[in-house]
Amino acid sequence: MSAKYDVIVVGAGVSGLLSALALSKEGKSVLILEKDNFVGGVCRSYKVQGYTVDTGPHIITRLDSGPLRVLMDRYFDLIPNFVPFGKYYLRINGQVKDFPWSLKDWMMFDLLPVEDRSLLMKSLIDIAYMVNSGRDMTRVSIKDIMPGSLSHNSVAFLDYLSYFMLGTGPENAPVSRFIDRKDYKTEKQKDENGISIPYVGKLYNMLIGGKPTDQYYPKGGIQKIVDSLMYSMPPNVKVNLDEELLSLNTEKVNGRQTEKITGITTNKGESLADSVIYSGFATDIPKLVSTPLPQRYVENLSMIEKVTSLSVWLGLDEQVFKEDASEMWVSTTRDKFHTWLIPTSNYDPLLAPMGKHLVGFAFVNPDMTSSEEMKRKATHTIFSNIPALEEHMDMIHYQELVPEKATWNMNAGFGDVTTPIDNLYCVGSDSFKRSMGLTRTSYSVIKMLDTFKADGNLPS
Image (cartoon, rainbow, N blue to C red; front, side, top):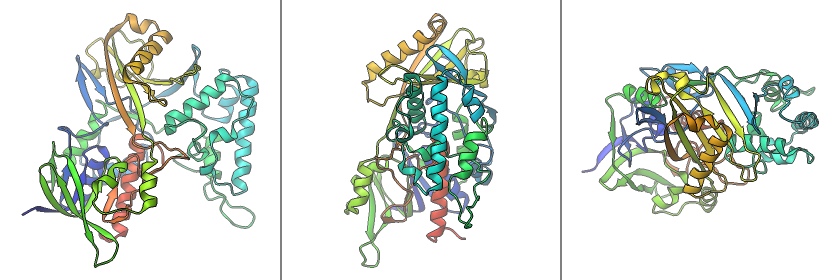
């Protein structure tokens, strides 16, 4: 007879683990299924020649009061030790400056021509006018508001921000993402008729707010978040590794057209459940169910575009980067090969062997360049920008990753926490549009929990 659980969680990446922890702490019996022989997905760390590398450079945003903090405070028995992330620098054509966080910073940001800075300020004012006129900023792209006479460097800078914040270019990057901040000081501001004006608080923060102070790195590496999750799991959670999902099983609800989840089938057998939390790629759902799903839902999932990236880890025989700060390398070449680097051993020296230095570089791959070509271009980019890195190189390690399961692209599909199947829910970076990385994933888990409760599966 098949085992029966309150909830089956498919996938032991961080979104699946957060979901399992929360639901088990709410009293549910939970089975976690993972096709690999480890947990954590792209949120883990491992050893390479004595260095502890993360799966891609990471930063945890909105940690003071954002979604991960909410989940940790509610459900974690052990909270990782986080250290402040520090400053951001921009590198363009060999010049390095502080990132411009406010209107004053922008006006002093001399890596871009003064004419461009004035034009970009005008664009921000135009955004305010669009907002006040009721324009839907989710349908306005960065390309739409970019002045046509910007210099090559300014275009490259906006291109960088679009690819690293949304995984897509300016022509498909909605303005609403760039005015999404954690706290909105004047969010409830109203016009003369008493009607709330959307985005006003967000615009205020974007223009005046200054640099964020709630961004951190987990001491010991990103693995410490997964370790805390696993330590906090109660006894009513079972974890099965090396078990691959073959199908999501459903049945008709009281003779109606609606399907309800009943369990799953894997390469090792069947398990029954009242609910299933799916943390894999939403694009795979239509292939995992035997019953036809609504055409609009399937078409939307088929339009999802994944973010692919290459990470390069360098072990160095001395500390080349002295500050607790990351650098954003804006590529002004035609191939848009932008880079983001974090010297992780600055935040925790134990991530590198004694006297050594560990630095991670992330490259977005918008043109789906081949693996070997990506590695060649990445290595050339790193060493041509800072030749001393090659002189001091002690280790080099490459990772090909999918850091976001869906781009935040105006013209692409995007998943949702809910599905057409009763009691089948999705979590992860392709199921909720807000922020990025682990923060976006945490938002999706909170939305799932709220929906799970609204559907009567948790007590109010």
